[in-house]
Length: 313
Image 1: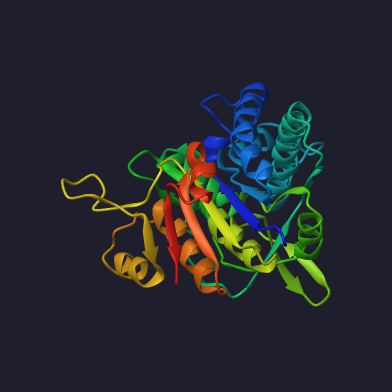
Image 2: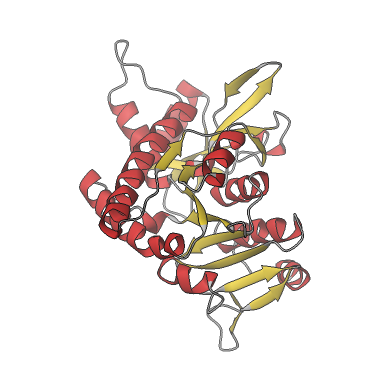
């Protein structure tokens, strides 16, 4: 019997536990690997995607601090690639250690992943994704003059640079990612939503944008013909009427039910909404496919059907 293929989309809490040091993030990933190894021990073929928000933000700050004629700051797409390589290295190391301890005969590879977007995506005309540090209005106006950046106020905490967040059309490296996965090895890909690139004839050009990591995970899950998409977040289940006296935990739900909840504005934009939208898209993409939204601590139980919010047609 062919092994089931599972794509796991890790949230930011799986990498960073409050400290930005390499040691702290490596320790967080060692814990993450130990929590996910049971899925692999249960015979699943696993592909992992991950966020990179705090990490790429720190890389951008480092680039700006060192910017000079001799060491010019790198653009956002290149900083995204740096974060993929850095987190991929840490994650490979964490899983290789866990595999060695448990005598699991599998290899781990991370793939620097380019995600194709449409140059006419409406987000390029209306950038909304905040990145980097907070500035005063005066500071933001000065930087905007120098660099043609767009700044917006973020929750009354100051002004942040905003960049486009286009939807993924395809993933350039998906054939090699699928090949690694189908051969039974663990593969790490599409970190931070992948590096956004625009196809121009035979060339791919990086662009200053950030792709939502949940949408990228969904697209990759489709392309590698996964059976299950697991989106890990801070909570064990999705809720409706969250935080109200009549809040309700969602367990087994249909695509139709989730679309109705979206129409009722049950899920916060920029938080649970993209996870639910990605989950719906994957469940609709092929017969028998399902999405599970749960926490890292309950990933193994959720795949076994014991907890989590499961979305199916």
